Image (cartoon, rainbow, N blue to C red; front, side, top):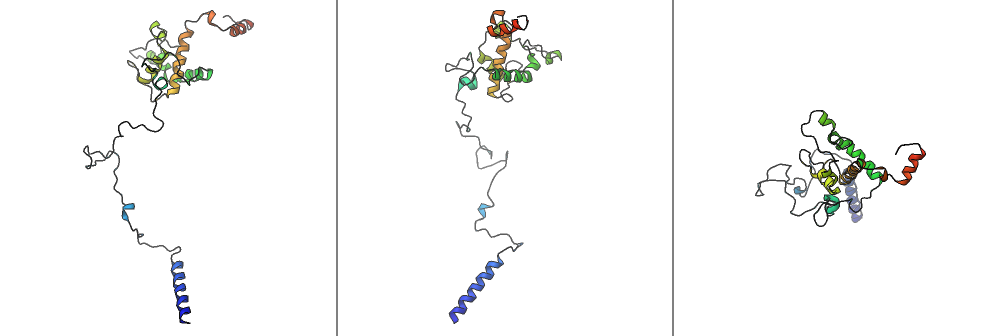
Length: 211
């Protein structure tokens, strides 16, 4: 009998303790066995840290470290240069010359390049009309017509003369699209009737156009 009463009393105590833990609020802070999990030492950006010799809390990347997806080991695509280090004279592998590419290059050219170079590429953009003292060269100069396609990509990426680099504003794919469109502009200014495809010539004649 005594054993039963003891067991029953113990169960009642446990049940009461369990019920008392449900939904009760306390103004006391919670109990943490290890405060290091809550109060960890850390530094904010640009803050000093005397533990390092240079006293900088922000640590530089490990030498040679490359962020995921930023290896950029295709020199032809990312730098416009071949294995020999020379500028490539054509689109890199994986970039196809399509109407969609030219349409994209045309649109990006009008946004980023035409204010200086003009939509036709002769260099009489709106900034020149507004008094900019150093006009950009015409794409139709023999010197620039003879340049490889990689040269156009390189200038867009790194700038030249008074032109600032556009690598931040214009992604790599769009730089190639713009370079292709610049080549279209160059070809358009020295093309002849003989360069018109036969099917296009037939359409022009059928519509009464003057080739």
